[in-house]
Length: 94
Image (cartoon, rainbow, N blue to C red; front, side, top):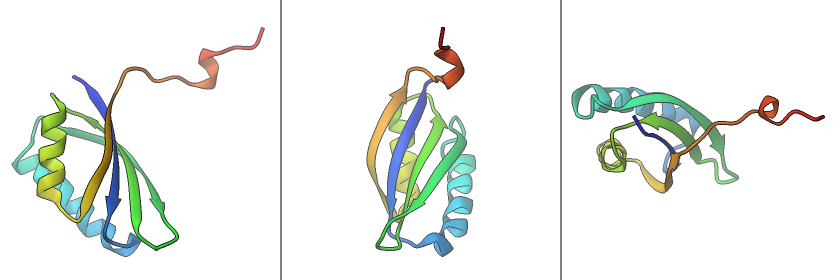
């Protein structure tokens, strides 16, 4: 299944994220069960609003975008299919 990284810009502060996290899980369970939310990296901007970088398994980009639309309270700044994962161990120094 394809994996995607999604950059989201939320209209809420960090305090509002637990409720949105629960809503995200509900949307996946009820409307997009083929999606798996692996994890998210969360940042807070100078304006106090949350931005996330989320990793999802999904059958296609349209499913991720539909989930985003149903979740609300944010815009998708970018979405890209992940083609590989690398770590420092993948590049040993001779």
